[in-house]
Length: 312
Ligand SMILES: [Ca+2]
Ligand SMILES: [Ca+2]
Ligand SMILES: [Ca+2]
Ligand SMILES: [Ca+2]
Image (cartoon, rainbow, N blue to C red; front, side):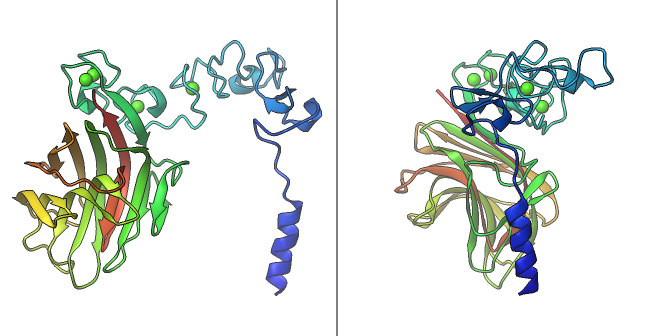
């Protein structure tokens, strides 16, 4: 009882500064780096710098937010901004190259060669010789579950990964904020940390996937028994018909990082690559909803990134 009282008092005292977009009547109602414009706190090219030029303020505070030296207004000076023309205050950079996730043509590879010039680097481009591809969703999970992504079950931040907590005989899902289209490739990296229960276990990319009915087309790393690694496989699983296609027997291991990609072409031609094993098969089933995401059944999985590229 006493602890609850203390928490209530702390909660009542906590009054964060208004964020950009918060209503205001004058500048005093906004944080120092924002102005009250048209009734809301906004970044402004005329915002007064925090410290006068030539003072001991560092480069970040000397540079006016949104003004000269910070073209995208994200608070990081152009000189050190890993995406000077894309607002990315967190400077997230999954592959550690010179470009932040927000402007990297292939945020999962340091090779940013883009042969067809469509803005998607060859290593991320399902059609590296044909223009028209575009990155429609990417997250490296530097800060837990991203805004706008949907979860089913328990999904937690863990370092620079996100962990889908496995439950025996049940599923856990993380869905990107985009719908599956007829030509689409989804990439992920995953370490299956553990498999649970006495039945089967899997980690998969689902695209398209219907979260309401828990039905879809999956690119799976599948284990017939959660308790051992015998007869494990990489396969395409159509849960609407129960058909398994493009099967490749492969003894994938818990505790090892693998990359996966799942391509849907012309709506019905699927290619699943996981742990270096590739299967291809036609699948005509269509779930009622067309979401895209990563999925575990009776498996705890640490996921490094999810990248979704839509094709022409
Ligand atoms: Ca930026
Ligand atoms: Ca990068
Ligand atoms: Ca390209
Ligand atoms: Ca292309």
